[in-house]
Image (cartoon, helix red, strand yellow):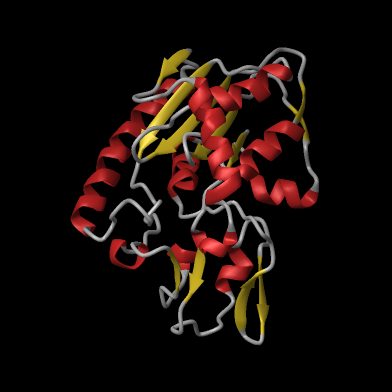
Length: 249
């Protein structure tokens, strides 16, 4: 069983690649919407959490889900975390492990995969060749990761992490500033297709008079709306337009 969150496709791609045949993939925002927090882990079933990294910590939807997650099992399953990242996974894995340990189901293994960093207020994804190279290298790493998980390899296998305190500080910054929807800008190019509203994982967008309106003060700030907009009419600050859009695959 794999729980995942993905806004632009990076973490979803990892989840699909490493999943065993017939293994269940559960999209975290959908589980939150349905109030599905109780899961039975049977036999030799393994349990994975796959998530992007925001401000050295987890996206709000992932932390909310892990806080509410309830697990039933007879024998503790092999439990692992995979963080996708552009520069560092920060303390996201440590933050996630705090939730899991409270449930008596701490991680046996921690992994990460370097992929294009979709936080385009800072990072430039306009060079398609460079982005393709990062994804090619990620493919090779995911192949090795799939074998490690199948073999139930234990331990920490992460490239760049930061102390737990950075995750605590990062979460405060993320909640207080980064997640504010007032940071998002709607440009005149919007055609009112409604894709952003339909795909928002926290339902922060509603269509009003054929225009998207952010109806919540805060969202997950996954930038899925920005990257998926067919007219690139949603921006965050001054740099996102020149830094381009990105969707895996």
